[in-house]
Image (cartoon, rainbow, N blue to C red; front, top):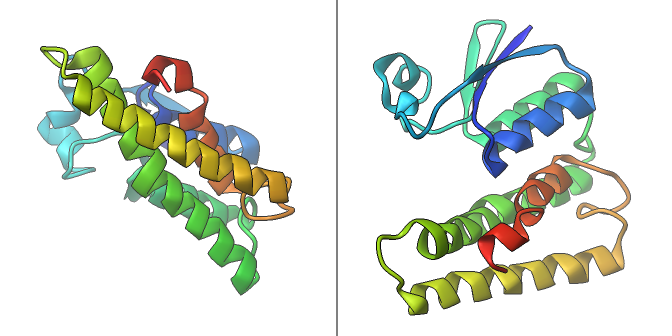
Length: 171
């Protein structure tokens, strides 16, 4: 049984969706981000960066959502091709989400929803960059049924969990 420490955020959803897609048994341990539970010593012992999600799988602790998705895909032999080209494509689109879509949409959320004052240049910058990244995804999905090609992978899950929040992010 896998233990999942998470919250209802796009990064948390990535792991939940992957676990469901793979049909792996797991238990959820909700982390209250507003109460700062992710900064408590017992959580920091699992993830020194103090961020969700984290899994514990047969005693092995894995943190960072992308690393968890790779762990689960490799553990099961599913949702990531094993051939070098397919694997590379999957990892490229996973990193596209982790280095682009997630951070840009996250900042769009911070400045449009949580910042203590309205700073329109920052809102515009992050919403426009998120929109540009969506256009990249849209072009790719005009070429192939899934981001990595013909197969549904962890890259699709990771990107979808963020893109589905486009309205919330003002994109």
